[in-house]
Amino acid sequence: MLVLGIETSCDETAAAIVRDGNQIVSSIIASQIDTHKRFGGVVPELASREHLDKIVPVVEEAFSCAKVEKPDIDGIAVTVGPGLVGSLLVGVSYAKAMAFALDKPLVGVNHIEGHIYSVAFENPPVVHPALSLVVSGGHTNLFWVPEPGKYKVVARTRDDAAGEAFDKVAKLLGLGYPGGPIIERLAREGNSDLVKFAVPRMGDGLPDFSFSGLKTAVTKFVRESGLQPVNEGETPSQEIKDLAASFQSVVVRSLVGTMENVAEEYRPRTLIVAGGVACNGALREASSAAAERLGVSVYFPSAHLSTDNAAMIAAAGTVKLQAGERAGLDLNADVTLRLGNIDVEEEALKRAGARYRL
Ligand code: KG4
Ligand code: ZN
Image (cartoon, rainbow, N blue to C red; front, side, top):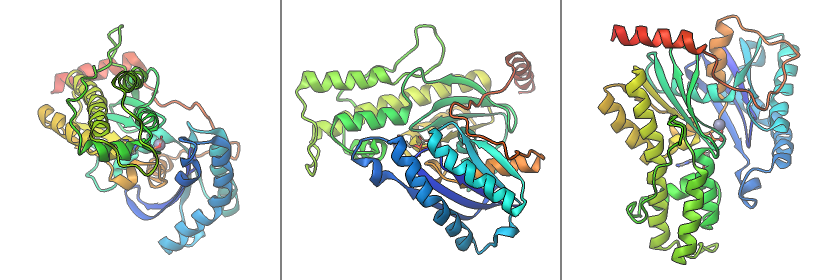
């Protein structure tokens, strides 16, 4: 089955052709980083305009790279949410027009579910139940996935997403955008013991995440220590590197500590770590160590599949198309689309069963 995936939820215009849900035939990503860089974050109006300019050439390139003719695809999968409305609408409108013109089946895909499917490539098939951490610039969620297509949110961020925290801290240290890769690079040369940031915990005992307090703690440290943000073109000082390492270390401890605690309770067979922040080497190392302690497998997408791409959307869409799901031409963007659809009681029973079997 050949599926065309289209992704335009944020600042990447992407199209991919995927065979049988796990082989990338082509994957094209047009990044808008250069457009948004000087603003230190994504500007929605600029993003949608750029998607309009790029959607046609990106889809054409996906077909030409794949050496596939348009009538030869078996379906189209497009991101319908969550994301920026103007951006999402470009992809959704284009996918609907193409599905209509080619008379091909169409499905809408949740962007976060797409991130979870990014491990469908370059990994063995996921053994369920799985526990999936999705960490990106817009989301930080831990999902219990008892079987394919069923999700329960077991932890979420109460404020900023983990990637957003990387971006904001990088901005306040004058390091540029996107912050994650820059902080990771500096952290490699830094001492993570410089500042002992505490792992944020919820007063109500729930395993949720919180990163905005951490950003405030970094701001406070900078103010009290008199540390100067880096000016453009300047080499970051050792103190900046140490601060980057300390910040990264607490974010990783928070994410992996929670994932491990929840895994001890839920007993998954596989851990999945996906989303842009999954590029982070320290997060990968700590997740692998946790998986080893738990005696389970851990899957990561490779770096080019961790950040936004359309191959993951095609992979998630393939499963839906194979299950007979079809979207009509009334398919619309849903800015606040959620993932997490399991009835809690039903799920608790299953969990008890799963544990009993173990
Ligand atoms: O998944 P993604 O491309 O877009 C969203 O759906 O948000 O994730 C982008 C986010 C940015 O916040 C970026 O700073 C972060 O992923 N990121 C990283 C790394 N590479 C990208 N964060 C930490 N370490 C990295 N190496
Ligand atoms: Zn994303």
